[in-house]
Amino acid sequence: MLRRDAPRRRLRTGTFAFVLPLVLLLVGCSTADLDQVSTPLSGTATASEYADMSPAQRREHERLVASYGGSYNDPELKALIQQVVERLVAASERPDLKYRVTVLNSPAVNAFALPDGSLYVTRGLLALANDTSEMSSVLSHEMAHVIARHANIREDQVKQAVLVSRVISDVVNDPDLGALAMQKSQRTLASFSRGQELEADAIGVGIASRAGFDPYGASRFLTDMGKSSDMRSTTLGGSTTTPDMDFLSSHPATPERISIAIANARQYAAPGAGERDRAAYLSAIDGMVYGDDPKEGFVRGRKFFHPKLGFTFTAPEGFSLENTSQAVLGATGSGREALRLDAVRVSPDQSLAQYLSSGWIDGVEINTVETLSVNGFTAATAIARGEQWSFRMFAIRFGSDVYRLIFAARDLTPELDQRFRAAADTFRRVSSGEAETVKPLRVRIVTVGFGDTPEKLATRMQVPDRHLERFLVLNGLDSNAKLKYGDKLKIISE
Image 1: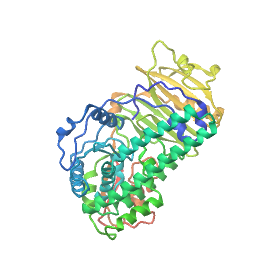
Image 2: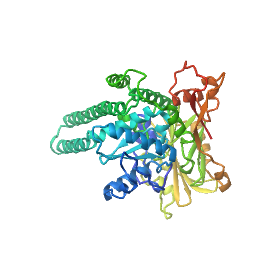
Image 3: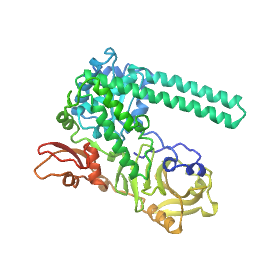
Image 4: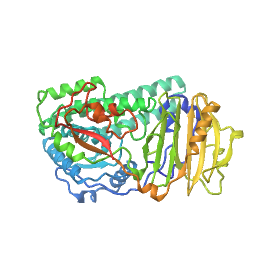
């Protein structure tokens, strides 16, 4: 989901000495054009309610939708969510409240709520859920935040924390004492947030149960979310921190939290009670886009392809790539090498060599700045070094934009540097005909046949690696799962 017009920010090579996620995040990019605005869904909401938003609420909504690649519109999925929300609203402590639910066109696993009743859920999260009760657990959890006014309370807490930090900076002269006070303030805020999440868990389970859904859907989804996070962490060199993947930061799928979710469910029903509506749910997500939407750029193995912007790039051997709203990120399994591809505006009057030397990143070795050509495009490259990381940077002028390709390594050997240079040489323009052949991956619902096993169905997964593990996580199955003839399961294919 690479975007243009990144803000100019100064990078310090020393900041990359902490952990790999900081290397991956580097600098933020721009907001994208808002292609479409979603239709509101609630127990009593109408489409006109978006027009009734205040200007500030409208701007916040449009900002959120734009930052997640626009809204994802599918009539059958929208109808199912409409029905679920109506049931949840009627069973909630505040049936008078109205909610607007937007499905975001993002592969990230995320959901969040605003104080005005705007709920957001990504198609990446919907792809991970396996039945309607699991989806209802997410929606009821976010509704609970609105009912308990958590967003308002958190805003007050943030303001208080900012005030404390100002007092500390203005009054306390002892750096160690000031740092200790700040740590206590931050811990208090974080602890309060965890308390809010557990409260929302409890309220949400109650709403879902009273609405007739299986109250154990929450614990099942938390379990699957934890497995998905673990798999993603090992794929990207131990990092689970990207701009799009913040649901897990506030919704940790820890064993303790899952146990609490199960205990909450037991207050309402024994296991097996309540509706799951698995068939209806799988039918609704059948054909849903999975992973990157090609119009926003997509990853296939080590290759990134952006039909809309008209270029492609292939990472070095051993790298796994991820397309986020901020940039294309990559890392090796060892976590010792990483990369980032993003776009910025650079004045045509400024040479790319001057841009690399201009100070937007610390530690640039001026004697390494070099002007070159990459597949006919004007480019420049240089090396920057920090205490623990070294960087091979490229700036490539492509149309009105400059693409920054930044490779990071713990040990930038001549051999590794040559691999980075070879990867940069794969940056090229794509033809319109080549772009038209791109098809998105989709969730496909298949029926288990005689002799089908997880291993057999996993071979039909059009994913870059770890086919069996991805199949099991996607379907909420254990490694020793036995499939039942006639059951419906998810695979990923074009």
